[in-house]
Each structure stands twice: as structure tokens, then as C-alpha cells.
Length: 295
Image (cartoon, rainbow, N blue to C red; front, side, top):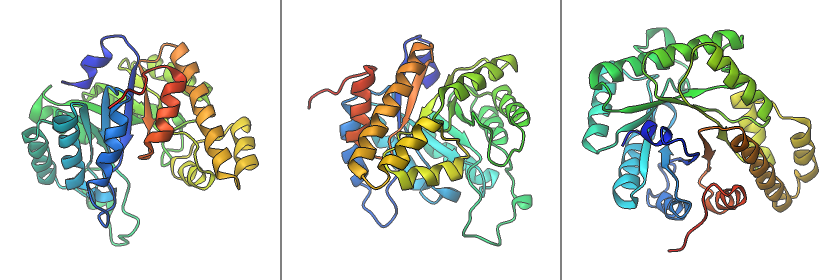
């Protein structure tokens, strides 16, 4: 089922993101996480893609097993940077064979460990080109989501220009958008209004990453360009050297953030699980969007 059909039911959905283990670790380790997350009754699970497609095969295999073995709709991330159009055709054919009908279409990060990488020589430069090609080849067979940046893409100096690029994604066939992390709901609400004013009428799903570790979240903020409100900054400064207290404070902060979003009629919430099912389960229990079940 295309995920957009679930959002059309007008019931707030819980979705979760997981990532493949690094190649040095066994693939099976991620399925312990999936087994625990299944108890939360997510509408779908999204599986990320390594930089430059480094975890491509694992992404496809995990997504296929999430759907076939766990009975959860799966969304496979697909990045186009560094891929030729022929590569994309082959990947789409593999996804189609595996019964994966939902894709998160992304440009992807430029490989930092490849100094000879030349962006100007790539066949794909923007996510909308990937979205366009998927729709041209498969019509509505695939459900397509794309990323949105409430505070603007780090590589785009003006939010106005970034909204224009987002509109381009929508016009080329995106079903819905999932935002990158943010910590101030006012930023999301302002962004949502800008999308609507620009004619972006598809669902915009807030993506939430709980602050469970001070060092980790500072790195993510650096990579994504997200700002940290004073209240959260105080929590990080207060508990930076107290991991257990930092985790508890982060769970509480994310829970309150999500509750406010749900009170303002968002179509759903997308939680970046970081493969931490215990902490994610606490948040989901707190917000009442779904409840942990039993084996």
C-alpha cells in the first residue's frame, strides 16, 4: 500500500526511522530493534541509505523483511547523488521485485571521503530529478516522500529559495514531505504556513529526533543546521555530563514537543529512532499515539 493512502484516513500516524548497521556488524542486529518497534504499531518504518549508497543492499533487504516478515509497511530511502540513471533504474526494479512500493527520494550527501568527487559531472543534482524519473518510469506504482528542512537546507542561503525547491519536488510527484529534525515547534508551524502559501498542499510530516545524548545532538545540529531553543540548550548544558538524566530530560522534551504538534492537527509524527527502541517506546507511551503491546 502507498503510504499516502494511510495519511488520507485523517488519523494521526506514527512512523519510525531506522538505519542499517554498519557493514562490520551483522545485519540481524537491526531486527532486534524492529521486533521491539513493532509493538508500537507504527504505520510504517523507514529505512535509511548510507552516504553515496554505501548501505544500498542492506537498505533493500531490511525494508523487504520489515514488510514481509513483520507485516509493517516499509519505506526505503533512495539517494541519487553518485548514481547514474541506469543505476537508479536497476535499484527501482529491485525494489519493485521485492514488493517495496514506498520510497523516500533524496539527493543524498556529497561523499566527504572522496576528494575527487565532482558534483558537476553527476547525472543527478537534485532530488526533484529523481522524483521525476521515478514517476516517469512507474507512474503511481511507487509512493514517494521527500525531505523538507523547516529552517532551510544547509546549502541554501535563503529559506525562500529552499521553499521554491520544495515546490519543485511537490510538482514532480511527491505524495508527502517529512521534515528534518527541529526543536522549536514555532519553526515548524511557520514553515508549514509558508508551504501552504506557496501551493504545497501535500501532507507535511514533522520529523522528531529526541535529544538522548548531548554530544550526538550537537553533531546533528551541525550537520542539519537546526537551531536549539534556550529551554533545550539549558537542559543540554545542565545534564551534559549526566547521561541518564540527559536521556530522561530528552525523552520528556520530545514528548511535550510531539503533544503540541498533535494538538495542532499534524497528519502524523515521524520519529528518528536512532535504533533505540526502549527510549522511543517511552516517548510513544507518553504521547498516547500508540501503546506498547506484548509479544
